[in-house]
Amino acid sequence: MFEIFKELVEIPGGSGFEEKVIEYMAREFKKRAYEVSIDPMGNVIGELGRGKRSVMVCVHTDEMCMLVKYVDEKGYIYFDLNGMIDERVLLSTKVDIGTEKGIYTGVVGVKNRHLMTAEDQKRPITLSDLWIDVGAEGAEEVKTWGIEIGDPIVFHPNSQSIGKESIISKAIDNRAGCTILLDLAERMKTEKIDYRLFFVAAVQEEVGSRGAKVAAQSLQPDMAIVLDTVPAADPITPPQQASAECGKGPVIRSMDVNALGLGTIYSKKIRQKLIATAVKHGIPHQMDIFRTWTDASTIHTAGKGIPCGGVFVPRRYSHSPSELVKWPDVEKTAQLLYLFLKELTSKTIDDLVQKV
Image (cartoon, rainbow, N blue to C red; front, side, top):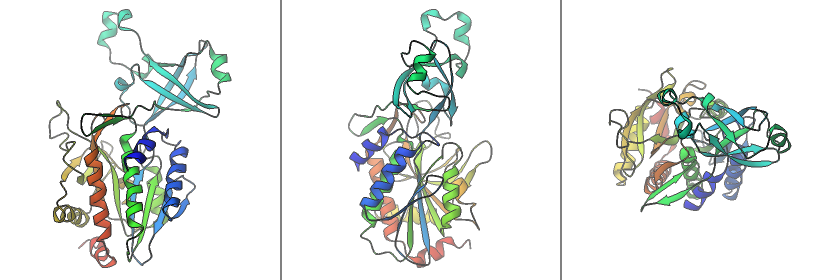
């Protein structure tokens, strides 16, 4: 599983530009003898089992990215955000620009501290203060490289193990989930289940959970489990803002919602079943409510409504070039979901999807 994770975090796949991740996930599902399809949106769907009831396990394939917006005459590239990125994490960061001719690495430029005035130091950083330097001598050279308006820009690969159990990398959100999904696919292929199981690697979560919405509308599962990451506690954030901690196991969620009202109240029955599975097998776990949204936000309102559960891997330094996760949390999340799916039956699903 760790080798798959290391491969996945290296792949560029900003929202709307997940093609290489799509190819990887489809190939790995096929290796495991799954029926595999890719819908017009780009969602990869691996299907297993037969039965009247069905369960969808969903992860997202995309990572935070930017898009080329303008190239000035000197060859400096200006960009816009494609997803929720804090401008502060961009300063002097190495990035990769994906073009039809290949990948070009550059650095996000910002005014040097030696050149800043007292007024400069008081102002917050904005996108207009930043540019990307790819080492070009001018706009014509940039053009010959194939860099065009609208090309995706992602953080440069940088995965590294630190300490005893921690890993830092770009795109842990949500290649950790993709890794777990493939691990589940490997384990579940030999299990005898009496329901249909859909493993969905969805696109465009970071810009509004668009792919998951399409997949849910198409598949119409009886219930769904969303697998993602969650911002974890750090030394200066109070627990009432971020209660999950790295190293304490998977997070089972009750509710998420963002400022615009996009979010999910997770199924109480599914949540209780996930908790019972963790307790039964001695898997350490956490519970939370968080101000965000996930793919569950568009899945649970699809069709006649799809009850959802949410399981999340805690990670620090969200949406940055160097997110941090503790590997045992990834392993324990995989174990919890495997046991949950293994012990699930059509009869159990019947009970879980009934509101009362």
